[in-house]
Structures are given as structure tokens and as C-alpha cells.
Length: 162
Length: 162
Image (cartoon, rainbow over the protein chains, first blue to last red):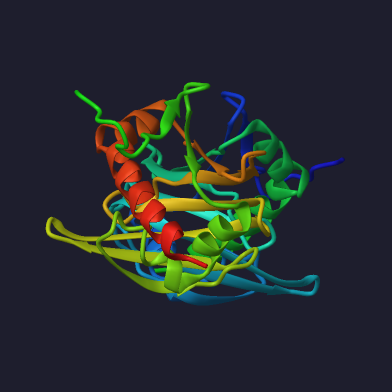
């Protein structure tokens, strides 16, 4: 694959253990701005679903609250949901995550934002699965490509925000 | 501790790996009868909450369906919820499970019923946690004692069912 100059950066994918996977990606915006895109539903809806229409059915953004997002793409309708375990404003969101297609297969996602010295922000998304098979299954569904599409939509949104 | 003749049997607790725990208990009823007590909400409500009042807020008993039970005891109100991963009638129920007090800490519970030759039924409840700390935390909350109280309530219910 040829990557042209100026193409969107791909997230760095690592698998630090047999039940984890980590995606890291740098965004050209200060941490406060990235946090807004994560925590305000009208902004979240513009990038989370890879740029597809996203219906935010539930967004109780606090410890113990539930979330449920439904993505409407040309390839169908996909629901995702979970519950917030921990929210530290501007820094960290920990929640459970499952896709309707595999109900009861639950991963824990920890999103961390790190302010870089150059004014950009590093987003780290760490996922812990119950089993290695679930982690590998998620990789095979094209989760990495989907995440990169979402991150490109987030790039576009961040460029528009004041 | 002195156990008198005729005292209710305690469930057998084992920890086959560092993230699992298993409870096994034999009930004096055929498998079909135990299945009814697991799958009919009006029966489930009579034993699941250790004999305390249990409000079944959600019981979508099929793959992908959600469940939510709220136990009202002298020590407070405790909500539990999850989602069904797999249901095989009379044999097996696999679901996620979390307690409101630790939102986003999710275990996977597999309940299996085995018909014994003598007409009794063995219930095996196997739980898989994301971390050893979560498994050990669950043990420290008195989960074993609570389960035994529920199983004694189930004994009483089974004795009444036709």
C-alpha cells in the first residue's frame, strides 16, 4: 500500500498481553478540545460511527451510567452499548463495551488523553477482553480499520471546533 | 462450625484458575423443575435474592436480551444486571453479570444443569472475571454465603413446585 504525504496517520496497534489490545493515535488539537469530542453527545455522534449516521440512544455520562449508540451504515445497523465505570474529566473514561452481534461478550475500554508539549493530544484506547479468542475475533472483524475511519472523522471534527 | 444432620448442604466452591470461580450444588428435584425456577420470573423472584424481596425490572430471556433484578433487604437495595449470551433450555444459561455498586466490572456466568441418575439435579455456576482482583473482591463480599442463602431459598421453592 502506498501512503501519500499528508494521508491520515494510522493508529498504532499493540497487543501487550494475550487479552489486551491498545490503539494509540495523535490528534492535532489540545486535550480540552478532544475531551469535548468525547463527552458531548452532539459532537461524539459526528465521529464515533466512522462518519456514518450515529443515533445516540443512551448517554448517561457518569459512573454507573449506561451508553448505547446505533450506527447506520450502508452495510446495516449495528448497536453498541456499555456502562461507565470511571470518568475523570479531560483525562480518562473507563467503560464496558459490547456489540449487539455478540451479546454478553464484554470488553473493558480505557480511553486516556495525554497532552503533548507541542499542543497536540495523544489518545490511547486500551481494551481488555475476557479471553484471547474474543480479542482475536475483534481484530478479525476489522476493528482496526473501523477505528481508523472513526479517528479520521474525529480529525475533521476537531479541525472545525473553536 | 457444627453442622447438624439435615442442615442444608453448602455449595462446593472451587477456583480452577486465577480468574474463575465455580459453585456446585445438588438440588432434590428433577432438572425440568430446576429449569422452571431459573427461567420463570415469578419463580426466580422467590429465591434469587436470598429470600429477600426481589423486583425483576427486566427479564428478556433470550440471546441478546437484558436482565435487571433489584434486591430489597434489611441492609439496603442492591441492583444487578446483565445480558444473555446463550440460552439452551433445561441445560445452560450464559450471561454477563454486574452489581450496581461496581459498575463496569463485568463477569460472565455460566449456569449448567446436570440431571443425576438418582433424580436429583446438579447446578454448576461458573464465573469468569476480567481480573483476579475482581474475582477475589467478589469472594470477599460474602458472595459464597449469599449464594448459599439463595440456594436454600431455592430448595424451599422446589419442594413446593408440582
